[in-house]
Image (cartoon, rainbow, N blue to C red; front, side, top):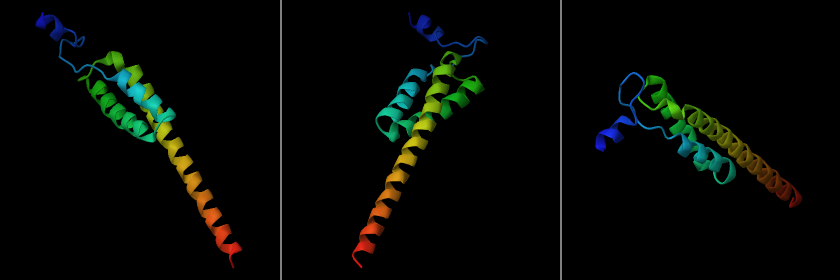
Length: 104
């Protein structure tokens, strides 16, 4: 029974590889867009590492597409959240400046 489980993650070359985490990275990428940028950063970092392992042949290739999409969503969500935060900081500074100018 355990031999059967061990054979589940053999690569076509016969070497043992890690199971992919593509679904988890994809979910983190989606959560990064919808909920909080922290998930986007996690998807970005995990996706980059897993894609390097897939390229090196030490991780299951079947999860490459899911991992790549999650990685890209992580990058996009992080950039969008950073832009939103920057926008709100600029608006806040403008409002403070207008308030200070009105008090003169």
